Image: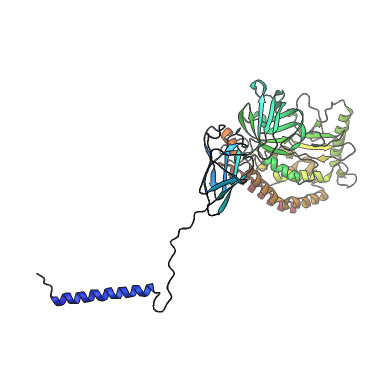
Length: 521
Protein backbone atom coordinates (compact mmCIF):
# COMPACT_ATOMS: atom_id res chain seq x y z
CA UNK A 1 0.00 0.00 0.00
CA UNK A 2 1.38 3.38 -1.09
CA UNK A 3 1.29 6.21 1.48
CA UNK A 4 1.66 9.91 0.59
CA UNK A 5 4.04 11.73 2.82
CA UNK A 6 3.54 15.38 3.82
CA UNK A 7 6.86 16.25 2.19
CA UNK A 8 5.86 14.67 -1.13
CA UNK A 9 2.57 16.56 -1.22
CA UNK A 10 4.27 19.80 -0.40
CA UNK A 11 6.81 19.40 -3.21
CA UNK A 12 4.08 18.47 -5.73
CA UNK A 13 1.99 21.47 -4.76
CA UNK A 14 4.94 23.84 -5.26
CA UNK A 15 5.75 22.35 -8.67
CA UNK A 16 2.22 22.76 -9.90
CA UNK A 17 2.09 26.33 -8.75
CA UNK A 18 5.39 27.14 -10.46
CA UNK A 19 3.95 25.85 -13.76
CA UNK A 20 0.73 27.79 -13.24
CA UNK A 21 2.53 31.06 -12.50
CA UNK A 22 4.84 30.59 -15.46
CA UNK A 23 1.90 29.93 -17.76
CA UNK A 24 -0.03 32.97 -16.57
CA UNK A 25 3.06 35.14 -16.98
CA UNK A 26 3.55 33.91 -20.56
CA UNK A 27 -0.04 34.66 -21.45
CA UNK A 28 0.31 38.16 -20.02
CA UNK A 29 3.39 38.76 -22.14
CA UNK A 30 1.56 37.61 -25.29
CA UNK A 31 -1.46 39.78 -24.47
CA UNK A 32 0.83 42.77 -24.01
CA UNK A 33 2.64 42.12 -27.24
CA UNK A 34 5.74 40.66 -25.61
CA UNK A 35 8.38 42.46 -23.62
CA UNK A 36 8.41 46.09 -24.72
CA UNK A 37 6.36 45.37 -27.94
CA UNK A 38 3.15 46.99 -29.13
CA UNK A 39 -0.15 45.19 -28.69
CA UNK A 40 -1.47 43.18 -31.71
CA UNK A 41 -4.79 44.40 -33.18
CA UNK A 42 -7.66 42.03 -32.43
CA UNK A 43 -8.91 40.12 -35.49
CA UNK A 44 -12.28 41.23 -36.89
CA UNK A 45 -15.12 38.78 -36.59
CA UNK A 46 -17.44 40.72 -38.96
CA UNK A 47 -18.62 38.59 -41.91
CA UNK A 48 -18.35 40.03 -45.51
CA UNK A 49 -21.63 41.23 -46.91
CA UNK A 50 -23.16 39.04 -49.63
CA UNK A 51 -22.92 40.46 -53.15
CA UNK A 52 -26.14 41.43 -54.93
CA UNK A 53 -27.12 38.21 -56.71
CA UNK A 54 -29.82 36.66 -58.88
CA UNK A 55 -30.00 33.01 -57.87
CA UNK A 56 -32.82 31.90 -60.20
CA UNK A 57 -34.72 33.36 -63.15
CA UNK A 58 -37.79 31.61 -64.50
CA UNK A 59 -41.02 31.91 -66.44
CA UNK A 60 -43.90 29.98 -64.92
CA UNK A 61 -46.80 28.49 -66.82
CA UNK A 62 -49.14 30.08 -64.28
CA UNK A 63 -47.98 33.60 -65.19
CA UNK A 64 -47.40 32.91 -68.89
CA UNK A 65 -50.34 30.93 -70.33
CA UNK A 66 -48.60 30.42 -73.70
CA UNK A 67 -46.10 28.09 -71.97
CA UNK A 68 -46.84 24.39 -71.59
CA UNK A 69 -44.47 24.09 -68.61
CA UNK A 70 -42.28 26.23 -66.38
CA UNK A 71 -38.93 27.38 -67.85
CA UNK A 72 -35.87 28.06 -65.72
CA UNK A 73 -33.10 30.01 -67.43
CA UNK A 74 -29.36 29.51 -66.96
CA UNK A 75 -27.62 31.95 -64.62
CA UNK A 76 -23.86 32.43 -64.66
CA UNK A 77 -21.76 35.36 -63.45
CA UNK A 78 -23.86 38.40 -64.33
CA UNK A 79 -25.66 36.84 -67.28
CA UNK A 80 -28.99 35.02 -67.60
CA UNK A 81 -29.87 33.16 -70.81
CA UNK A 82 -32.41 30.71 -72.12
CA UNK A 83 -34.97 29.79 -74.75
CA UNK A 84 -38.73 29.62 -75.04
CA UNK A 85 -40.61 27.32 -77.43
CA UNK A 86 -41.52 28.42 -80.92
CA UNK A 87 -44.71 30.45 -81.08
CA UNK A 88 -44.29 31.96 -77.60
CA UNK A 89 -44.19 35.73 -78.01
CA UNK A 90 -41.43 37.41 -76.03
CA UNK A 91 -42.94 40.87 -75.92
CA UNK A 92 -45.23 40.29 -72.90
CA UNK A 93 -43.48 37.79 -70.62
CA UNK A 94 -43.80 37.74 -66.82
CA UNK A 95 -40.70 36.61 -64.91
CA UNK A 96 -40.17 35.20 -61.44
CA UNK A 97 -36.76 36.17 -60.08
CA UNK A 98 -35.10 35.00 -56.88
CA UNK A 99 -32.53 37.51 -55.61
CA UNK A 100 -31.12 38.90 -52.36
CA UNK A 101 -31.64 42.60 -53.03
CA UNK A 102 -34.05 45.11 -51.60
CA UNK A 103 -35.29 46.04 -55.06
CA UNK A 104 -35.07 44.70 -58.60
CA UNK A 105 -35.49 47.16 -61.48
CA UNK A 106 -35.69 47.14 -65.28
CA UNK A 107 -35.51 50.56 -66.91
CA UNK A 108 -36.03 52.10 -63.44
CA UNK A 109 -39.29 50.17 -63.00
CA UNK A 110 -39.52 48.04 -59.85
CA UNK A 111 -40.16 44.40 -60.73
CA UNK A 112 -42.86 42.37 -59.01
CA UNK A 113 -42.68 38.61 -59.35
CA UNK A 114 -45.63 37.10 -61.18
CA UNK A 115 -46.93 40.52 -62.17
CA UNK A 116 -44.55 42.79 -64.09
CA UNK A 117 -44.56 42.27 -67.87
CA UNK A 118 -41.46 42.93 -69.98
CA UNK A 119 -40.53 42.76 -73.66
CA UNK A 120 -37.73 40.21 -73.93
CA UNK A 121 -37.39 40.59 -77.70
CA UNK A 122 -34.07 42.33 -77.01
CA UNK A 123 -31.54 41.72 -74.23
CA UNK A 124 -32.73 43.34 -70.98
CA UNK A 125 -30.68 44.64 -68.04
CA UNK A 126 -31.91 43.77 -64.53
CA UNK A 127 -30.50 45.96 -61.73
CA UNK A 128 -30.37 44.71 -58.11
CA UNK A 129 -30.21 47.30 -55.33
CA UNK A 130 -29.27 46.44 -51.73
CA UNK A 131 -30.43 48.31 -48.62
CA UNK A 132 -26.92 49.73 -48.11
CA UNK A 133 -26.82 51.13 -51.66
CA UNK A 134 -24.70 48.43 -53.30
CA UNK A 135 -25.84 47.45 -56.81
CA UNK A 136 -25.28 44.81 -59.50
CA UNK A 137 -26.54 44.38 -63.07
CA UNK A 138 -27.50 41.22 -64.95
CA UNK A 139 -28.06 40.94 -68.70
CA UNK A 140 -31.03 38.72 -69.53
CA UNK A 141 -30.96 37.18 -73.00
CA UNK A 142 -34.02 35.13 -73.97
CA UNK A 143 -34.44 33.76 -77.49
CA UNK A 144 -37.42 32.23 -79.21
CA UNK A 145 -36.82 28.62 -80.26
CA UNK A 146 -33.30 28.73 -81.78
CA UNK A 147 -32.91 32.46 -82.22
CA UNK A 148 -33.28 32.19 -86.00
CA UNK A 149 -36.28 33.65 -87.84
CA UNK A 150 -39.18 31.22 -88.20
CA UNK A 151 -40.85 30.66 -91.57
CA UNK A 152 -44.34 29.19 -91.74
CA UNK A 153 -45.41 27.49 -94.98
CA UNK A 154 -48.99 26.35 -95.02
CA UNK A 155 -50.08 24.39 -98.06
CA UNK A 156 -53.69 24.69 -99.17
CA UNK A 157 -55.70 21.73 -97.94
CA UNK A 158 -52.65 20.67 -95.91
CA UNK A 159 -51.22 19.20 -99.10
CA UNK A 160 -47.61 18.11 -99.67
CA UNK A 161 -44.76 19.48 -101.79
CA UNK A 162 -43.96 16.37 -103.77
CA UNK A 163 -43.02 17.53 -107.28
CA UNK A 164 -40.18 19.46 -108.90
CA UNK A 165 -42.38 20.42 -111.81
CA UNK A 166 -45.77 21.25 -110.32
CA UNK A 167 -46.31 24.07 -107.86
CA UNK A 168 -48.74 23.78 -104.96
CA UNK A 169 -50.36 26.87 -103.50
CA UNK A 170 -50.44 28.13 -99.94
CA UNK A 171 -49.33 30.93 -97.65
CA UNK A 172 -45.97 32.19 -96.40
CA UNK A 173 -45.14 34.16 -93.25
CA UNK A 174 -42.07 35.01 -91.16
CA UNK A 175 -41.62 35.65 -87.47
CA UNK A 176 -38.39 37.63 -87.79
CA UNK A 177 -37.44 37.39 -84.14
CA UNK A 178 -34.68 39.64 -82.93
CA UNK A 179 -32.78 40.12 -86.19
CA UNK A 180 -35.35 40.58 -88.94
CA UNK A 181 -38.66 42.18 -89.76
CA UNK A 182 -41.76 40.02 -89.60
CA UNK A 183 -43.39 39.10 -92.90
CA UNK A 184 -47.17 39.17 -92.86
CA UNK A 185 -49.05 36.22 -94.33
CA UNK A 186 -48.86 36.28 -98.13
CA UNK A 187 -50.00 33.98 -100.92
CA UNK A 188 -47.33 31.90 -102.58
CA UNK A 189 -46.75 28.75 -104.58
CA UNK A 190 -43.97 26.28 -104.00
CA UNK A 191 -42.37 23.21 -105.59
CA UNK A 192 -39.35 21.00 -105.14
CA UNK A 193 -35.95 21.75 -106.70
CA UNK A 194 -32.46 20.27 -106.97
CA UNK A 195 -31.08 17.03 -108.37
CA UNK A 196 -29.49 14.55 -105.96
CA UNK A 197 -30.68 16.73 -103.07
CA UNK A 198 -34.27 16.19 -104.21
CA UNK A 199 -34.18 12.52 -105.11
CA UNK A 200 -31.83 11.04 -102.49
CA UNK A 201 -32.40 12.87 -99.23
CA UNK A 202 -35.53 12.98 -97.04
CA UNK A 203 -35.14 16.67 -96.20
CA UNK A 204 -36.15 18.34 -99.46
CA UNK A 205 -35.10 21.68 -100.99
CA UNK A 206 -37.75 24.01 -102.43
CA UNK A 207 -38.39 26.93 -104.73
CA UNK A 208 -41.05 29.40 -103.64
CA UNK A 209 -42.69 32.09 -105.76
CA UNK A 210 -44.56 34.96 -104.13
CA UNK A 211 -47.49 36.69 -105.76
CA UNK A 212 -45.63 40.01 -105.66
CA UNK A 213 -42.01 41.04 -105.33
CA UNK A 214 -41.00 41.42 -101.70
CA UNK A 215 -37.97 41.59 -99.45
CA UNK A 216 -37.37 38.38 -97.52
CA UNK A 217 -35.09 38.37 -94.45
CA UNK A 218 -33.57 41.69 -95.45
CA UNK A 219 -32.69 40.63 -98.99
CA UNK A 220 -33.79 42.79 -101.96
CA UNK A 221 -37.29 42.51 -103.42
CA UNK A 222 -37.97 39.55 -105.69
CA UNK A 223 -40.64 36.93 -106.24
CA UNK A 224 -38.57 33.71 -106.33
CA UNK A 225 -36.73 32.36 -103.30
CA UNK A 226 -34.87 29.10 -102.71
CA UNK A 227 -34.85 26.90 -99.61
CA UNK A 228 -31.58 24.96 -99.47
CA UNK A 229 -31.87 21.92 -97.21
CA UNK A 230 -28.09 21.50 -96.63
CA UNK A 231 -28.74 17.85 -95.77
CA UNK A 232 -25.41 16.38 -96.94
CA UNK A 233 -23.46 19.20 -95.33
CA UNK A 234 -23.80 18.65 -91.59
CA UNK A 235 -22.18 22.00 -90.82
CA UNK A 236 -24.83 23.60 -93.08
CA UNK A 237 -22.14 26.20 -93.84
CA UNK A 238 -20.37 25.26 -97.06
CA UNK A 239 -22.62 27.20 -99.45
CA UNK A 240 -22.62 30.22 -97.17
CA UNK A 241 -18.82 30.25 -96.78
CA UNK A 242 -18.33 29.96 -100.55
CA UNK A 243 -20.66 32.95 -100.89
CA UNK A 244 -18.53 34.83 -98.35
CA UNK A 245 -15.55 34.26 -100.62
CA UNK A 246 -17.66 35.55 -103.49
CA UNK A 247 -18.31 38.77 -101.61
CA UNK A 248 -14.52 39.27 -101.46
CA UNK A 249 -14.15 38.68 -105.21
CA UNK A 250 -14.57 40.75 -108.37
CA UNK A 251 -17.52 38.61 -109.47
CA UNK A 252 -20.35 40.98 -110.35
CA UNK A 253 -22.91 39.24 -108.12
CA UNK A 254 -22.98 36.50 -105.49
CA UNK A 255 -26.25 35.24 -103.95
CA UNK A 256 -27.22 36.46 -100.51
CA UNK A 257 -28.66 34.04 -97.99
CA UNK A 258 -30.01 33.78 -94.44
CA UNK A 259 -30.64 30.80 -92.17
CA UNK A 260 -34.16 30.21 -90.89
CA UNK A 261 -36.28 27.56 -89.21
CA UNK A 262 -39.01 26.22 -91.50
CA UNK A 263 -42.38 24.81 -90.46
CA UNK A 264 -44.61 23.19 -93.08
CA UNK A 265 -48.27 22.83 -92.13
CA UNK A 266 -47.27 23.60 -88.53
CA UNK A 267 -44.72 20.78 -88.44
CA UNK A 268 -41.03 21.54 -87.94
CA UNK A 269 -39.03 20.64 -91.06
CA UNK A 270 -35.55 21.78 -90.01
CA UNK A 271 -33.07 24.57 -90.57
CA UNK A 272 -32.89 25.94 -94.13
CA UNK A 273 -30.61 28.31 -95.97
CA UNK A 274 -32.96 30.83 -97.61
CA UNK A 275 -31.17 32.00 -100.74
CA UNK A 276 -31.62 34.27 -103.72
CA UNK A 277 -32.25 32.44 -106.99
CA UNK A 278 -29.78 32.73 -109.86
CA UNK A 279 -31.90 34.71 -112.28
CA UNK A 280 -31.94 37.94 -114.25
CA UNK A 281 -32.65 41.13 -112.36
CA UNK A 282 -31.10 44.43 -111.47
CA UNK A 283 -30.58 43.20 -107.90
CA UNK A 284 -29.57 39.67 -108.96
CA UNK A 285 -27.73 38.79 -112.18
CA UNK A 286 -27.88 42.10 -114.01
CA UNK A 287 -28.07 41.14 -117.68
CA UNK A 288 -29.55 44.39 -118.91
CA UNK A 289 -32.15 44.13 -121.64
CA UNK A 290 -30.47 41.51 -123.80
CA UNK A 291 -27.89 39.58 -121.74
CA UNK A 292 -27.55 35.83 -121.20
CA UNK A 293 -27.12 33.64 -118.12
CA UNK A 294 -25.55 30.30 -119.08
CA UNK A 295 -24.71 27.09 -117.28
CA UNK A 296 -22.50 24.11 -118.12
CA UNK A 297 -24.64 21.09 -117.24
CA UNK A 298 -25.57 17.52 -118.21
CA UNK A 299 -28.08 16.28 -120.78
CA UNK A 300 -29.90 13.97 -118.37
CA UNK A 301 -30.80 16.96 -116.20
CA UNK A 302 -32.62 18.83 -118.95
CA UNK A 303 -36.38 18.98 -119.23
CA UNK A 304 -38.41 19.17 -122.42
CA UNK A 305 -38.58 22.98 -122.26
CA UNK A 306 -34.91 23.60 -121.54
CA UNK A 307 -32.86 25.25 -124.27
CA UNK A 308 -29.20 24.32 -124.71
CA UNK A 309 -26.41 24.01 -127.26
CA UNK A 310 -23.11 22.17 -127.55
CA UNK A 311 -19.52 23.21 -127.87
CA UNK A 312 -16.72 20.73 -128.60
CA UNK A 313 -16.40 20.10 -124.88
CA UNK A 314 -19.57 21.09 -123.04
CA UNK A 315 -23.35 21.21 -123.06
CA UNK A 316 -24.35 24.81 -122.31
CA UNK A 317 -27.86 25.62 -121.02
CA UNK A 318 -29.44 29.01 -121.67
CA UNK A 319 -30.93 29.85 -118.26
CA UNK A 320 -31.90 33.43 -119.17
CA UNK A 321 -33.69 34.73 -121.18
CA UNK A 322 -36.44 32.43 -122.34
CA UNK A 323 -35.66 31.76 -126.01
CA UNK A 324 -36.10 28.98 -128.53
CA UNK A 325 -33.52 27.40 -130.88
CA UNK A 326 -35.14 29.28 -133.75
CA UNK A 327 -34.50 32.71 -132.27
CA UNK A 328 -31.74 35.03 -133.39
CA UNK A 329 -30.61 35.29 -129.76
CA UNK A 330 -29.94 31.55 -129.74
CA UNK A 331 -27.78 31.79 -132.84
CA UNK A 332 -25.89 34.72 -131.40
CA UNK A 333 -25.04 33.20 -128.01
CA UNK A 334 -24.24 29.70 -129.27
CA UNK A 335 -21.93 31.18 -131.94
CA UNK A 336 -20.21 33.48 -129.42
CA UNK A 337 -19.39 30.72 -126.92
CA UNK A 338 -18.16 28.41 -129.67
CA UNK A 339 -15.97 31.21 -131.09
CA UNK A 340 -14.43 31.72 -127.66
CA UNK A 341 -13.74 28.02 -127.21
CA UNK A 342 -12.27 27.70 -130.72
CA UNK A 343 -10.02 30.67 -130.07
CA UNK A 344 -8.99 29.30 -126.67
CA UNK A 345 -7.67 26.12 -128.27
CA UNK A 346 -6.04 27.82 -131.23
CA UNK A 347 -2.28 28.21 -131.63
CA UNK A 348 -2.30 31.96 -130.86
CA UNK A 349 -4.71 31.68 -127.91
CA UNK A 350 -2.34 33.60 -125.60
CA UNK A 351 -2.13 36.65 -127.85
CA UNK A 352 -3.13 39.57 -125.57
CA UNK A 353 -5.21 41.24 -128.28
CA UNK A 354 -6.55 38.48 -130.53
CA UNK A 355 -6.43 35.52 -128.12
CA UNK A 356 -8.82 34.40 -125.38
CA UNK A 357 -8.56 37.79 -123.63
CA UNK A 358 -10.57 39.24 -126.50
CA UNK A 359 -13.57 37.17 -125.37
CA UNK A 360 -13.45 36.89 -121.58
CA UNK A 361 -13.14 39.09 -118.53
CA UNK A 362 -9.96 37.46 -117.24
CA UNK A 363 -10.28 38.76 -113.68
CA UNK A 364 -13.66 37.07 -113.19
CA UNK A 365 -12.26 33.82 -114.59
CA UNK A 366 -9.34 34.03 -112.13
CA UNK A 367 -11.54 34.68 -109.08
CA UNK A 368 -14.15 32.06 -110.01
CA UNK A 369 -11.34 29.56 -110.56
CA UNK A 370 -9.63 30.29 -107.23
CA UNK A 371 -12.81 30.07 -105.14
CA UNK A 372 -13.77 26.82 -106.85
CA UNK A 373 -10.23 25.43 -106.48
CA UNK A 374 -9.79 26.52 -102.87
CA UNK A 375 -13.07 24.84 -101.91
CA UNK A 376 -12.34 22.02 -104.38
CA UNK A 377 -15.99 21.98 -105.37
CA UNK A 378 -16.62 18.60 -106.95
CA UNK A 379 -18.98 19.77 -109.72
CA UNK A 380 -16.85 22.74 -110.76
CA UNK A 381 -14.36 20.57 -112.61
CA UNK A 382 -16.73 20.01 -115.50
CA UNK A 383 -20.03 18.52 -114.41
CA UNK A 384 -22.64 21.19 -113.56
CA UNK A 385 -23.46 24.47 -111.82
CA UNK A 386 -20.69 26.22 -113.76
CA UNK A 387 -22.34 29.57 -114.47
CA UNK A 388 -21.22 32.43 -116.68
CA UNK A 389 -22.97 35.41 -118.21
CA UNK A 390 -22.54 37.84 -121.07
CA UNK A 391 -24.12 40.98 -122.44
CA UNK A 392 -23.95 41.47 -126.22
CA UNK A 393 -20.91 43.53 -127.16
CA UNK A 394 -19.20 42.80 -123.82
CA UNK A 395 -16.86 40.07 -122.61
CA UNK A 396 -17.90 36.78 -121.01
CA UNK A 397 -17.98 36.93 -117.18
CA UNK A 398 -17.63 33.86 -114.97
CA UNK A 399 -20.18 33.47 -112.20
CA UNK A 400 -22.28 33.54 -110.19
CA UNK A 401 -21.08 30.93 -107.69
CA UNK A 402 -23.52 28.12 -107.01
CA UNK A 403 -23.93 24.67 -105.44
CA UNK A 404 -21.07 24.24 -102.95
CA UNK A 405 -22.57 21.76 -100.48
CA UNK A 406 -20.19 19.09 -101.82
CA UNK A 407 -17.11 21.28 -101.48
CA UNK A 408 -14.45 21.55 -98.75
CA UNK A 409 -13.85 17.79 -98.98
CA UNK A 410 -17.48 16.77 -98.41
CA UNK A 411 -17.53 13.98 -101.00
CA UNK A 412 -16.36 10.38 -101.02
CA UNK A 413 -16.54 9.48 -104.72
CA UNK A 414 -13.84 11.79 -106.10
CA UNK A 415 -10.34 13.02 -105.34
CA UNK A 416 -11.82 16.39 -104.46
CA UNK A 417 -12.19 15.00 -100.93
CA UNK A 418 -8.45 15.46 -100.35
CA UNK A 419 -6.71 18.71 -99.46
CA UNK A 420 -3.86 17.90 -101.83
CA UNK A 421 -4.03 18.08 -105.62
CA UNK A 422 -5.50 20.40 -108.22
CA UNK A 423 -9.09 19.82 -109.24
CA UNK A 424 -10.75 22.66 -111.15
CA UNK A 425 -7.47 23.25 -112.98
CA UNK A 426 -8.36 20.10 -114.95
CA UNK A 427 -11.50 21.72 -116.35
CA UNK A 428 -10.78 21.86 -120.13
CA UNK A 429 -11.10 25.64 -120.37
CA UNK A 430 -8.93 26.29 -117.31
CA UNK A 431 -6.39 23.61 -118.22
CA UNK A 432 -5.83 25.55 -121.44
CA UNK A 433 -5.71 28.91 -119.68
CA UNK A 434 -2.99 27.57 -117.39
CA UNK A 435 -0.80 27.02 -120.44
CA UNK A 436 -0.49 30.81 -120.67
CA UNK A 437 2.17 32.14 -118.22
CA UNK A 438 0.33 35.47 -118.04
CA UNK A 439 -2.81 33.76 -116.73
CA UNK A 440 -0.75 31.69 -114.27
CA UNK A 441 0.88 34.80 -112.85
CA UNK A 442 -2.53 36.44 -112.41
CA UNK A 443 -3.73 33.38 -110.49
CA UNK A 444 -0.65 33.42 -108.25
CA UNK A 445 -1.00 37.11 -107.44
CA UNK A 446 -4.70 36.81 -106.76
CA UNK A 447 -4.25 33.75 -104.55
CA UNK A 448 -2.19 35.93 -102.21
CA UNK A 449 -5.29 38.08 -101.74
CA UNK A 450 -7.43 35.10 -100.73
CA UNK A 451 -4.62 33.78 -98.53
CA UNK A 452 -4.47 37.12 -96.72
CA UNK A 453 -8.21 36.74 -96.02
CA UNK A 454 -7.90 33.19 -94.69
CA UNK A 455 -8.36 34.21 -91.04
CA UNK A 456 -11.41 36.26 -92.01
CA UNK A 457 -13.00 33.14 -93.54
CA UNK A 458 -12.11 31.05 -90.48
CA UNK A 459 -13.73 33.69 -88.27
CA UNK A 460 -16.82 33.61 -90.51
CA UNK A 461 -17.07 29.84 -90.02
CA UNK A 462 -16.95 30.27 -86.23
CA UNK A 463 -19.45 33.11 -86.32
CA UNK A 464 -22.00 31.18 -88.37
CA UNK A 465 -21.49 28.04 -86.27
CA UNK A 466 -22.25 30.11 -83.16
CA UNK A 467 -25.35 31.48 -84.87
CA UNK A 468 -26.49 27.88 -85.46
CA UNK A 469 -25.66 26.58 -81.97
CA UNK A 470 -29.31 25.88 -81.14
CA UNK A 471 -30.68 25.31 -84.62
CA UNK A 472 -28.22 22.53 -85.41
CA UNK A 473 -29.52 20.69 -82.34
CA UNK A 474 -33.14 21.05 -83.38
CA UNK A 475 -32.31 20.14 -86.98
CA UNK A 476 -30.45 17.02 -85.86
CA UNK A 477 -33.28 16.04 -83.52
CA UNK A 478 -35.51 16.15 -86.59
CA UNK A 479 -33.25 14.44 -89.14
CA UNK A 480 -30.67 12.60 -86.97
CA UNK A 481 -27.70 12.94 -89.32
CA UNK A 482 -24.85 13.55 -86.85
CA UNK A 483 -22.76 10.44 -86.33
CA UNK A 484 -24.41 8.77 -89.33
CA UNK A 485 -23.12 8.43 -92.90
CA UNK A 486 -25.07 10.60 -95.31
CA UNK A 487 -24.27 10.36 -99.01
CA UNK A 488 -21.64 11.40 -100.00
CA UNK A 489 -19.79 12.27 -96.75
CA UNK A 490 -16.07 11.53 -96.71
CA UNK A 491 -15.94 11.69 -92.90
CA UNK A 492 -18.51 11.14 -90.18
CA UNK A 493 -18.29 12.94 -86.83
CA UNK A 494 -20.54 12.49 -83.85
CA UNK A 495 -20.97 16.17 -82.92
CA UNK A 496 -21.70 19.38 -84.77
CA UNK A 497 -18.58 21.06 -83.39
CA UNK A 498 -16.41 18.22 -84.71
CA UNK A 499 -17.95 18.72 -88.16
CA UNK A 500 -17.16 22.44 -87.97
CA UNK A 501 -13.61 21.77 -86.77
CA UNK A 502 -13.10 19.38 -89.68
CA UNK A 503 -14.29 22.01 -92.13
CA UNK A 504 -11.84 24.54 -90.71
CA UNK A 505 -8.88 22.17 -90.63
CA UNK A 506 -9.61 20.98 -94.19
CA UNK A 507 -9.77 24.57 -95.45
CA UNK A 508 -6.54 25.53 -93.67
CA UNK A 509 -4.68 22.50 -95.02
CA UNK A 510 -6.03 23.20 -98.50
CA UNK A 511 -4.77 26.79 -98.41
CA UNK A 512 -1.32 25.62 -97.31
CA UNK A 513 -1.14 23.06 -100.11
CA UNK A 514 -2.28 25.55 -102.76
CA UNK A 515 0.17 28.19 -101.58
CA UNK A 516 3.08 25.85 -102.20
CA UNK A 517 1.67 24.24 -105.35
CA UNK A 518 0.86 27.52 -107.11
CA UNK A 519 4.25 28.92 -106.18
CA UNK A 520 5.80 25.96 -107.98
CA UNK A 521 4.01 26.55 -111.29
